[in-house]
Length: 295
Image: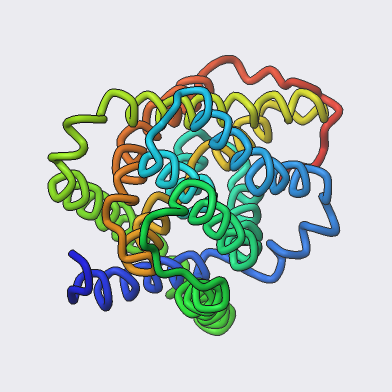
C-alpha cells in the first residue's frame, strides 16, 4: 500500500472527514468545561497523554516485543481518543459531555505530543531501520487532517445546528465502518508477519486496553469521581484512535508493518469496551456521591 492512492489520498481524506464529524459534535461550551470542571478533564488528559504511553512502553519492555511490534504499540498509544470512545460512552450511558470534551482536547494536544512520541519511537525502536520522519512535517500534517476539519465542523455546528445534530449518526457510522475496512486491509496485507507474531501482538494490545481502562477507573477512585465519570475516564483512557495510528504508520511513516498493532487493537478494544458497557448495567451506586461535575 506504500505510496498508493489509498495511503496518499483516500486515508487522509477519510480521517479529515471523520474529524469534521467530530467537530460537528463539539461546541464552544465543551471547551468552557475546562474552567467549570477542570479536575476531571485534567485527570483524564493526564491519563491519556502521559500515563498511557508510559504503560505502552512498560508493556513493550515486559513482553520483550520485537522493534516493529513495540514501535506500532507506541504509535497507537500516542493516538488517544477518537469518535469510537464517544460511541462507547454513549452505549454505556457515561458522561458523554466529558467524553466529547476529553476527545476534543486530547486531539488538539496530540498535535504536539504525538510527533514527540513518534520521534522517540523512531530513535529508540527503529534506530537502524530506514524511516522517513520529521517532527515539523508530521505536526503540519496532523493539523491539516485534525485541527482544520474539527474547526470547520464546529463552525458548521454553530451556524447549521440542526443539520449538524442530525448528521452525527452518519459520521459515527462512517467512522466505525472505515476503521473496520482499514483493519481488515492491514491484517490481510501483513498476514505473513502477523501469523508469526499474532499471539504476542494480541496479548500486548489486549493488556494495553484492559490495563489502561482499569487505570482510568483507578484515577476516578483516587480523585473521588462518581461512577458515571469513572466509566467515562475508563473509556477515554482505554480506547485509542486506531484509525489515526494507521494513518501515521502508513501515510506519514510509509511503514504498513507499523500499522499491525493498530489493526489488532481494533479488535481487542471492544473487549474492554464491552466490560464497561456491562458495568453500566449494574446498580447505579456512585463511587462518591459528593461529586457534582457531571455535565
